[in-house]
Image (cartoon, rainbow, N blue to C red; front, side, top):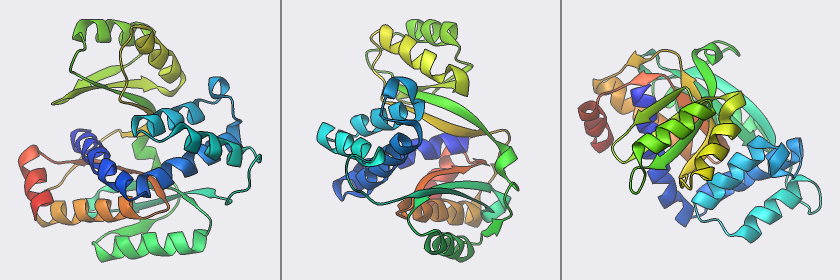
Length: 250
């Protein structure tokens, strides 16, 4: 999971630059709108909406934008109609890719995704071909600064977390889907500030990637992330720090 986890942190940092030009906000607004449409406007009973709102707040999205997106979702305000879709494929080196999108034109989106896969030595796959590789989990990211590690671990594990991974500047707390909200509330009750809390997919196994395949894979993932309709991208690659740094710099 190391490569996938490192990429998640890289894309989050990149997302802060995207927010300046509106791209990240657009994706967050779509997620909030669809979450409200499918599960209602009450965050207490709609975990997907609650996670989307928390992500928006972590990126300093104005409250009025969040409220407007929710109202569009429940029909109180007019708005675009987005549909969810999943595309599966393979990247360079045989890496499995699971791509979640929200789109108002599936034909356009699948064409653009297929074009990017082909351009960077990847390919589309049949539905179900790679979905089994990824387990659905909750992930909560907490910055290390000002956090007592023992208190964090005790609160998280007692509430049902199954794994805590220490990264350079943060802790990543992974939970089963059904325990996600309990763990989030437990950490908040300890006055632990959450940087992100979201639903994710974690690969059961990873594929080592290096050299040209590493460069092509990271470029492909960057281009897919930059595609307007792509909401979430998951990949089961393993890449050490030196290889990743070299690939990103090339």
